[in-house]
Amino acid sequence: MNRFVAVQEPTCTWSVFDTFDDVPAQVGGVVLVGLEEAEAIEMASAANEQCVLRLRRALAAGRLRLVADRVA
Image (tube, rainbow, N blue to C red; front, side, top):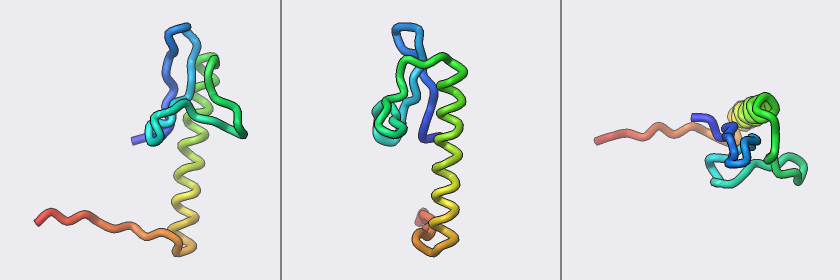
């Protein structure tokens, strides 16, 4: 599941939505609303790639470890 998704707003513009925090995404304090569709898709994709990179770095540095859920 992707954290960031492009969604069409009621005004027919697009935004990038943060599905974890349930709010529009922000970059450098700028809320990602009122975008063209292609911009929103590109920004959502880039934000998701950054999340993956951060997780990989944290795993490699030993700051994070994966724990498997086990069903009894």
